[in-house]
Image (tube, protein in one colour):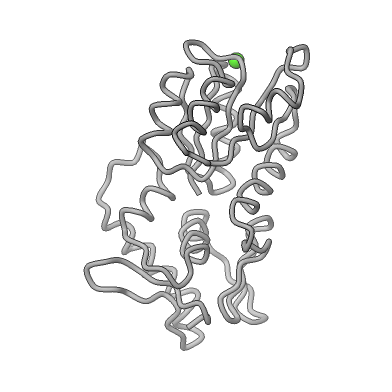
Length: 225
Ligand code: CA
């Protein structure tokens, strides 16, 4: 899952980025509203964490502009405690939720996960494909009753494949959702991760849940393979 953080306070932006990356998210940071708006137009983010008071373009205007563009990426707005936001105003501009500073990272994470779940009604808390189960909140993956240990990156790729279960997903799409802009390596790195995922979730169980669609990408079998 790829997240955009639009925040001008550098310390706050850095701690959000570090915290979210530790949870397996890919994170881009924009230091002002103008860059935020530009990035949001360039990249298909899974969610945006948006500070209200920003240089150049403030959070209200940014959010309203996105919605006018018909961009419904979930937005979690951050507001200052002594700020002049009332809830109705924030939600009126099209934000999906808001959080008052200072907040605990744990609360932010819970709100963010709730937004990502809500994004599509059919999205259950635990993702399942047959007997393969993935819990985005606890980072647990199971094949039947067997617990499987994945690295943060493997987990992130599997989560994305499972959310898109039954659809063909290109390497580029995986890159876009799982890596951030600081990565400019070879897209074939995706193959390396797919291989290592298969050795953990498929081969020991004699399954083939991650199919290769030649020239197009990968497809997660919705029945678990
Ligand atoms: Ca600010």
